[in-house]
Image (cartoon, rainbow, N blue to C red; front, side, top):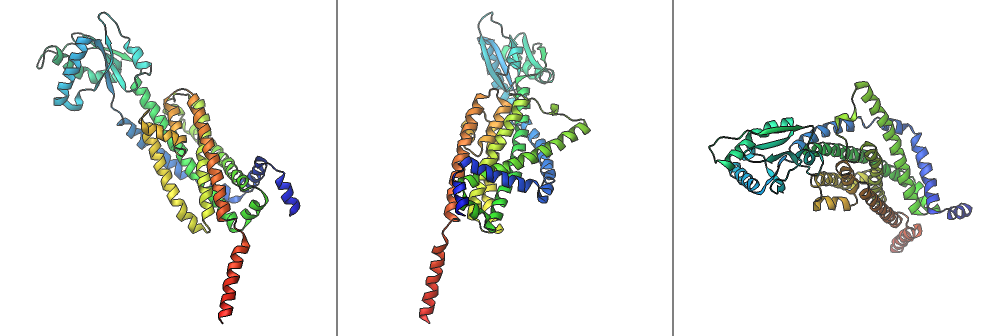
Length: 415
């Protein structure tokens, strides 16, 4: 035993963690239970499909498209005043207006560039020209729907109602910032849901493995031989590797099913960072979310002695994970708000919030900072969990034995 201990002491933290990770990874990968575990995600995939349908309906009503206005100051002010007056009588029949630019006399405005440039996410059409000769630019369906209300606004601004409505000139575009933003939100919702389901499905393996080894005293032998931090890191990364094996198998099955049925990712609008970057970020954020939740489950495992206690203690963590998911989903609909900033900074919701941000906003620099912050939180959580485990489990045996012997002696002396 002294030889083994001396050999273990020569191992660095990462070398010892690699030994534990390789041991757990090989033991689980070639077990019969893991084969049956791979069949488990059929039901979560069904739930993901239903959640995607519900999410699409939520996105339909999440933000009301706006009508951008770019006119000279007198016409612009008159249009806004007429719209406010008509909204009191027609309600939602009059589209909300947002000022894009107050034009100087003789200045022109490129409505098509404003719609397709992505700078105005909620603007579905643009009103330019004059109130006597208004020009409505947008997607074909949108301008057809808004031509009548825009004519009423122009008539109310020029003549007052009732009065003749001017002819609204229509200029159609292939897409608008609002439709593109809506599509990216659908992609963000799908990515968040998939990340949440995979994390909740796979993170439980960490807890069950720890409790099993804790029950048969294997974990205490490992902790006596190598640092507890190495044991925790090794188990986390072993389970992360097993999770990637499962995801690869499920992804291959889903890809084969997609080829057979003739479907494709074209059903989802492309994300802001592109599909390859989103896939890479999805892998990284899954790893961060898994390690963060796994570290919590390891700490819970240190507090539980039986499977029943595991179920009792893990329930609050599972419920909190649902709250975290809903927080990240809400933050996705409020870009730049305090809610989104909190979801990004809070470690457990950060992977979900940042993955949704990748689908909606270009740029990879922000993700480098977020991944670094999440990795730091993983390190802190694992060290805290290992200390808790050492305090709760690795207690010296003589103290409890001496206490029991003291009570026995007291009973004998009493007799």
